[in-house]
Length: 280
Image 1 (cartoon, rainbow, N blue to C red):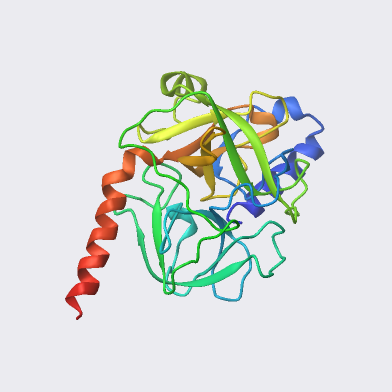
Image 2: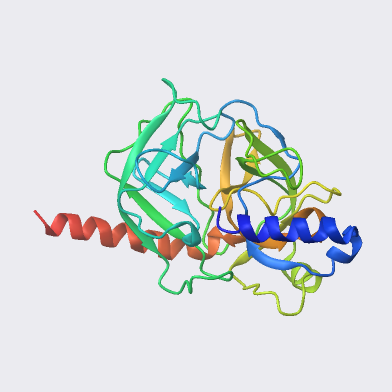
């Protein structure tokens, strides 16, 4: 992913220095690398709303995303360069296994938030529209959106294709998950460095377990609140950025807070529909 070279350089430098404790003093805010450090295998299709994004229809995973209805996907803005023609696969469990449970689609329209500056920081959200609707079944389902400006707390779950060990840059073939806890915004802000690009439209979480990291979850992927009694999930955050190296940083992970963007999401859909109607 985008910071692979940066992370690799850091790892080599830290190894040669022979001191992980000194490395912890040189933390860098950066986009999620595409990995969940020391997560565990998710139950097959326990997150039927997660999708895998690729730059073209010839699929090669670059980011995660969340299916919010049959036509639209939410992801991180930093995952998008040229949205039209991107490939999206839903129904995956094994990252490279495509079978009767998976559905592949091509993006015909995409929008990056107009205030996103292209770097680590706020407004890291994008929407993608597919040329053919997904068909919902037990393996492919949408995630619910929160109420506007809803502030969550308590236990959450992060999903993404990751690896079981820090500094092993081969993504696991199986969908990974890690349990996290929401960190209250002011506490999160106090925990991070003074120059952290934290914004009121972010939400923070922490695994609260040493060497288990949420900050390296797939960029664009879902942070969700799961409701056992309802059997569904609500999308709290979109994986955005964190401090690397995550295993040393022991800092909260930073997500785009979805509840802050409900009017924007609705506006994108409305404008797209109006434009389509106007063509006929």
